[in-house]
Image (tube, rainbow, N blue to C red; front, side):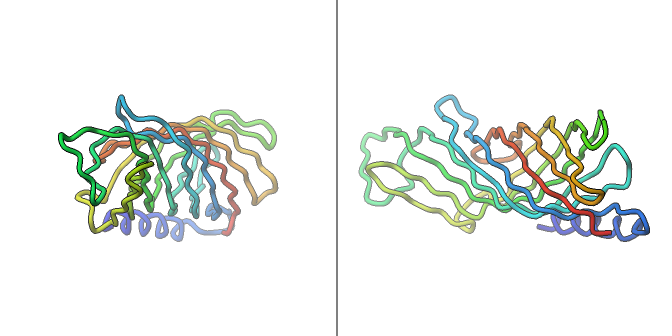
Length: 208
């Protein structure tokens, strides 16, 4: 949480120092449908999504950086022992297939570079990371029901993921932009690391 607070504070102070006649600070909203899967031979991909608030600092023509906060839902079917369910007698222990859902709050830090511009259109490449705080996880089985663990019940609540993307930007007006960015992200610090294929749909508006 200290890293997240310092990151957001740095971005806000930087934008205030450069504020002037030129609009270089944008705010907006994003929605990101995705396919997510735990990085394991026995896991499968399932639909997921994230949605939230975007804060963008854009002081140069061809590149800008984004932060903000998102709510993230990721899901995968996994093979594991049913130790998370109560009143289950599995002797000898046998792994079963179950659905693993993970809900998190995420703070992104993403750099966008426009490598091609023509009129109101631009092609983008992106590179970024996200810091995630897991708020809950749920295990679901057809026979055993479901079991939910809250953030306080988890050994490691904090996760980090890195990603790359290539996308498109449309200038709708002088102050309003639409970003569409397919990307691939992977967890690098996680008890159950996810791979995520996603499409970020983002509308941003210049505020000063």
